[in-house]
Amino acid sequence: MLLTEVASALRRKVVEGELSTEVALEALDVLMTGPGGAIELAADETVMPLALTLALSLQHKLPDCVYLALAERSGADLVTADGRLDQIARVRGIPTTLVPTA
Image 1 (cartoon, rainbow, N blue to C red):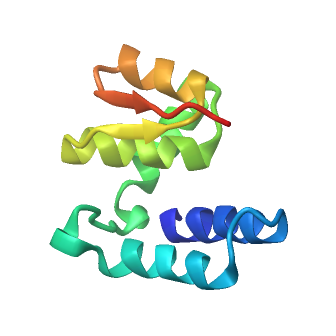
Image 2: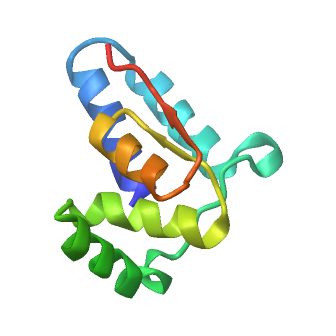
Image 3: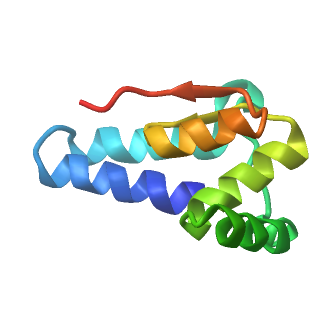
């Protein structure tokens, strides 16, 4: 999901004239091959039952709950621009970084 969401955001930035196609492709490449492996891609199907349970119990969007479930399972911090998701994660004890939106 992460690659799809990032590629979608990059596409939007290119369409809005904020990035060139070359810069968008370079940014995606950095994410996929990353220096030092700072981002580890995970198979979301391993947490789908937990994500569905969270989505139902929290009455929140399933894709966001996939990120919550992955963070809970791995002990990773959650980075989001979504204030509600940030609050849900904090209540669940997941360390978060709230990214400001432009």
